[in-house]
Length: 258
Image (cartoon, rainbow, N blue to C red):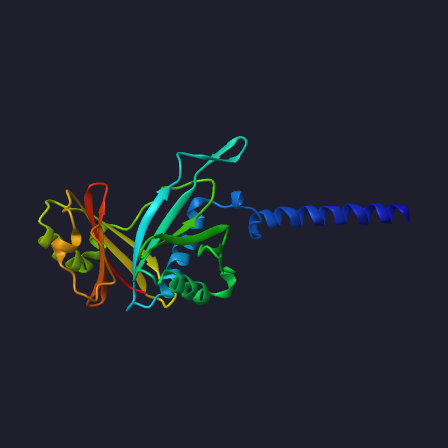
């Protein structure tokens, strides 16, 4: 009887050990450091697509940014270096409507995000896979959302879309550049999948130099979503266009999709 109990205990121990090893290779991760930056980026992109999918195109213009590394490195463990990336989605809306838009976005996100909106109008949400979302008003008519990977191991390079992939979406940006006449532009393109199955595209051009006032130079229509000396946002056709003075230059974006 005693031998039988010892044998049973040994067999059970082997089963538990085997299940432990299996779960390490096949089970869902239980901590952020068990995942890589490459594994986090699809969640980041999907979250920003979900945010954009809550917007009313008649009253809001999204601007998608690229991947930005936060700091040079971070510590996954005491002996292991990692990396942390953020991706930003700006939303431009009529000044004064920011709180209502934040509430609309909170209510429009799927329940799994557990989105919350503080009394200070700061939105926070959990995109899953240890990716956090945070958003708030940064200036009149401008809301900034950040999707954060947190610190993780990095096993591959992080790349944005090729600018040539969105050539057809350049026309609204080029029209603004032609009016500004500031010189040669540097182009970039960013994309994220929409919950509806489409793709959110933002095409961006940066030029050196800037006028004193974008409103005076571009003379936007009275129904422009934002019209300030340093920011003009409006819709033309199916695209949302944003022109900003940043760091002494001008950044022009055209966004289509969700």
